[in-house]
Amino acid sequence: MTKRQIKRIFRIVFIIASITSLFFVPWILVKAWILPLPDTVQEQVYEAIGHGFDGMIVYVDEAGKVPKFYTAGWKNRENKTPSDPQSLFKIGSISKLYVAVAVAKLVHDKRLSLDKTLADYLPELVGRIENVDKITLRLMVQHRSGIPNYTDCPGYWDTPTKSIKESLELVMDKPAYFEPDKRYGYSNTNFLLIGKILDKTLGYSHRQYIKKEVLIPLELYNTYSLLSEVDLEDVASGYYVGYEEDMKFYDFVGPSGSMIATAQDVGIFLRALNDGSLLNEGEQEIYSSIYVYEHGGLVLGYQSLAEYHKDIDAVVIQFVNTTNFDGYDWNLSQIVYNRIVKIVRSKKSS
Image (cartoon, rainbow, N blue to C red):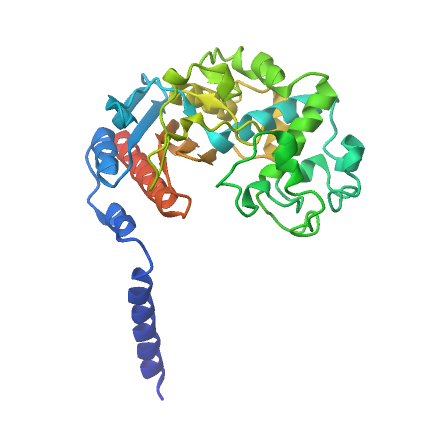
């Protein structure tokens, strides 16, 4: 068989494999990806609602320009209340950025050490969590601890836990995912434990510390630590595909994803985190060594994306109040987000 024949066979196999794989991809994702790019962000947001999202809020902050809001769909589907750019939203794991800032500040102040272990900070966990004498604070922040993720436990999303204690009990005495620092493994339990360490070190709630050191200095008066702190009328409704129930009444109390905020407040925070105005030089160096500068959030009924794009000096925040947790809506949200960024980038270069 000649090289040309072999290459032809491989080419045919590749084409067949590619075509076959399309049958396992929801066509709405393919459609959302291949549609011609609209001229404006607002058109893209309207298009996203056409893909099946209930409501969307987009905040775009380009350096030197007045920030802009784009909305479509419903804030409350049952009452036919239009999506409101000032609505409060459950930002899920974006909360971890705020917690990581608190860690960086306290490490810089010598009140915490990244190299102390979980056993040092919370000795009561010895014998309950594997490798506590090897898992450092640094590894927990970096998701390299190997501690099981409590939200991955069977049935968690059917009946979410109502307290930090209940969440931790789900992973107590369970085998580690892997040996500490052997690989990356995202685990909400890491930040649940970090919250406990912060509370113990401070002598009061880390939420108060974040408010004092982050929210007040940045004048983020529409950012809250817990759902219980806000008027529920101000919160956008959240929807899970296949259920009529409004998911905004579900309360998530863990530091891994409990915060509530407007898109603008998240945008202001993210720009300050990235441009160095939130942290001093020493704190910024520590933060850069332990955590990321962008994040997504996903809880029942709510998904969010928050990123700073250095090449165009722009912060883009996207809130969507529809989820289904099988990857479909999350992937669709990312496709829409990337298209929005492309539109912003094209306007910048034109």
